[in-house]
Image (tube, rainbow, N blue to C red; front, side, top):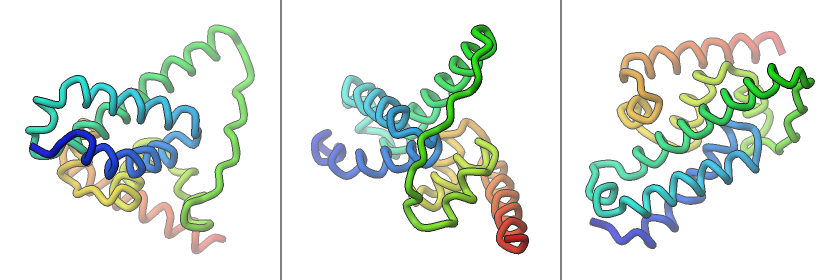
Length: 153
């Protein structure tokens, strides 16, 4: 089992970058990343022995983002507020990421986890709570949608 400190130094920047790309909000990304890593630390004896501690942590962070997104949506409906504009975040790899940001959440999450976090489809499936074949189909749909946007642009 790898020591938590060594694992954390490698995993933290990747996890934060991925959550930022998924959420579009640096504050939300930091909160989800910090909470997921704190949970991993609390359970390190179990998590560190897993085949993919990073996969477990990504799943926790993605679930936190989902939960917060649902809560925010409910608050907005209840308070009848206008949605707040997301802060403009510089794309990590050029204009292509602005196209990724426009994808539906499920496709955006799969694309970020695959291409930004460089995770295998099996880990992405565990993180997102879907089958590996669904990950593959989601990535195919996202690539098709992105290709159409590039062709139109």
